[in-house]
Each structure stands twice: as structure tokens, then as C-alpha cells.
Image (tube, rainbow, N blue to C red; front, side, top):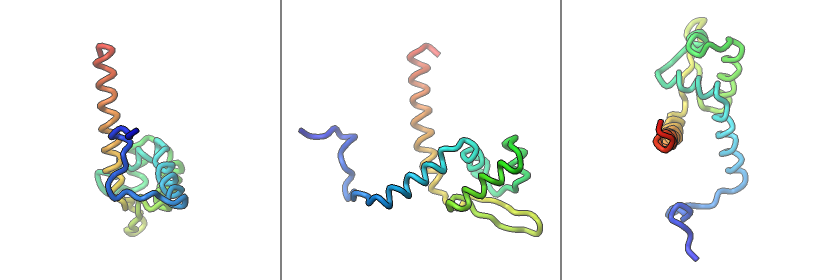
Length: 119
């Protein structure tokens, strides 16, 4: 019995070892928090300070700083100090490829549901 096309292995695909799967899970875990996604979305437009991110998200300074620290530790954002100000920016642009893929799929699903329910 053959597998459906969506289950077929990609050409050249190699099975990931458990340690690699742990890293993949850690990356997705970082992206599973809505506040971190909001911060990344704001940083998509370019560098921002913590103050600018607080204003843009409406979140508290401590909360924004905590999530920026986690994103920085994960290598997703970086910091650049300018005098007394710290500017944050996206360090891993591939995040947006992943987000665009997921968001594009979700928009299609929402459109299909709206059409089905007459919305």
C-alpha cells in the first residue's frame, strides 16, 4: 500500500535524530506564546526599543523585557546598544517564512469556514 502524496518523504529527506527533534520542539515552543509573536510581528517592521514595543503592544515593560530576553536567548532576536538605549531586531529572518506559511494556511482555513457558514 502506498502512502498518500502528503505523507510521502521529500526527496533527500533524512530522519532527524532525537536531539534535533528536541531543538525543533524548543523553537516551536518559543513561538507558541502570543506575546512573543506580537513582539516578533512588531520587529518585522525594523528595530524597536523596549519602550516602543511596550507602546505598540500595550503590555507592561517587565513582560516585554522578559519575552525579549527569551527570544534573544533562543537566537531569534538580537540587541544593539546605542547610548542608554537598547534596540531589538530580528536575528533570524527565516522566522517570517515559517510565519507566512502558517498564517497563509490559517487564512485559507478561515475563508473556507466563512464560505461554508455564509460569512
